[in-house]
Picture: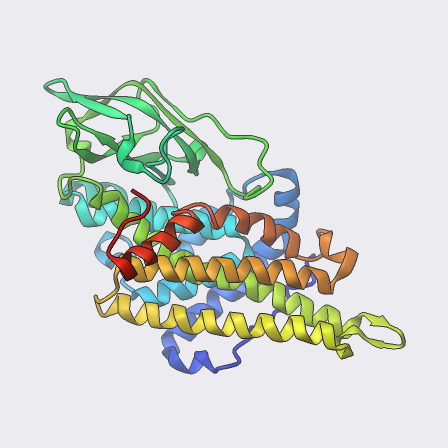
Amino acid sequence: MSATIQFTAPDHFLVDDLFSEEQRMIRGAFRDWVNRFVKPDIEDHFEKCTFPIHLVKELGAMGGFGPFIPEKYGGSGLDYMTYGIIMTELERGDTGIRSLASVQTSLVMYPIYAYGTEEQKMKYLPRLASGDLIGCFGLTEPNHGSDPGGMITRFTDKGDHYLLNGAKMWITNSTIADVAVVWAKDENNVVRGLIVEKGMAGFTAPETHGKWSLRASVTGELVFDNVRVPKENILPGVQGLKGPLSCLSSARYGIAWGVIGAAMDCYDAAVRYSLERHQFGKPIASFQLQQKKLAEALTEITKAQLLAWRLGQLRDQGKVTPAQISMAKRNNVEMALTVARDLRQVLGAMGITRDYPMMRHMMNLESVITYEGTHDVHLLITGQEITGIAAYK
């Protein structure tokens, strides 16, 4: 059982005071759930490279899927600030658990809600919200990651159905997903969204093995070989890259909050260890260099908390821009990865063991710094905001 289950959250600038009583209550429920059902077993799953699939319906029952989706469609009808708070707690447990919720919420439920028909919403959203269905999101391809517009996955109109061909890669939930929101080009080279269901002939999802990151999460491919997709499965409400990019903005927003949880978990473990571990006749917490690491970590966590809080305000007010989300995602992921690396050193050799969460978070965050837009591309998005020039094109 992990030493960090007894968790005390850092809140040096009293950010808690900025949240409503309801938000604090929801956070408390998810914090307790993570402590009781994620933390005790997550190191086993990470070590064995297995996904704790039994948590899916539990998370659905908790309201972890589609918190901002209206109750009519099975969601909780909450605001985006609360969504961020939930993501923080889930990633404190493990990035793989937060990724499950991020994909289900922002990359599958959100596009169906925002761009789907009423029939599609009623058919899929309540079952996705409950965890009865698991979803995945197909955008990245083997040869097209940061440049999704170059995708080669295509579908053609065959009269009473579409015929889909192509492949997607690095897909979270791929092998366990019941439905996939897939982005492909039509015959006019326009990107469209399609809902593809498990069991459709020609649709396979091979798993990706050999990962040193996100080991408690399922990653794989989506392969489409003349897959017949019913015409009623196309998302009619959007055309072009605006569709998938809006989903990514929602997911990146959740990441900006989520990674704070990983950093908080590392910080709490390091503080506890530094007070318990004695060298030269006193706790290592009494040495200046250890205090420096802890103080710098707390400072960076605090800055990230305030950045995420303001981002949540802007999102709920309808003022947030994709560039602001990019900046927060980039900053907070780098913060969490740096905190995990630096605080691992506080624990010395113990820091590389499964008794403490640092190495697991470090390896997970190496994926997070790349997915949903790479660290470098997010930097260039800010550069475009400054100069008006898109250096990544």
